Length: 322
Image (cartoon, rainbow, N blue to C red; front, side, top):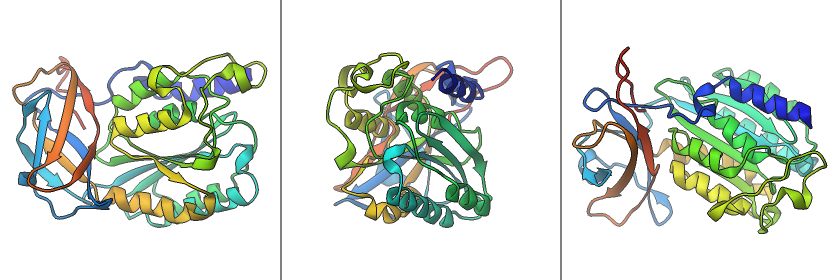
């Protein structure tokens, strides 16, 4: 148990920005653009062909001028964070491997993917790489066993974000309730709020127990007791909160038979999202900024991150917001 804790600490220490709870993306008003990744749907289908004039974006309630709208032009960074606890063993693991390999197979030339698995411990098999053959080999070598620590895994997955121009997607798969995490839910949600990673949790609904999360009820001996707080006190609520804060969505499956199609669908949907760029005006250059994105004159739903943390430029140069 102690080894598991130090493994987590060691992995998170590699990316101190998130570990300190600071915002990984900043801007100085008038010097850099804010990017907002948005999914627009109508009748559960993505809406394509929209222009800047079709959107209305407010930053802290102030209407902003959108300077650019793009789709499928930026490379993707895909973080595959996969549950390999004991309940995934056997046929489910084989389907998980196949689904993940199919997702890797749809990556384009400039796209990259990272692979992390979790059970009692987190294992970073590969940081972001474009070497799809290596990723397939690593996927083929995955083994299942142990308890589930998806709260720790979600945080560690966020910590893999790099400072580049790529768009970031985390595909977070888990088939059951968290039984082994050391971290509480709220710090993980706070980290999610302060990053541009879009989280798509995928889970098997029949395995998600809708009971209050309490480590004292079922944790292995030696793990410290903890409880999710407020609205995030069940596994489903935590997954929904991670998706809502980052502009993603939770996908519930009845079984693992459709896992392959679902993984490919997630990546396809992510490619059809819009990236809205604007230079903040008439708003503070510090503190938390609430975002509100809508489509004008059309019946459509928009999912985008709820906000971002801003800070003034340092003396050494202007910061930036992704």
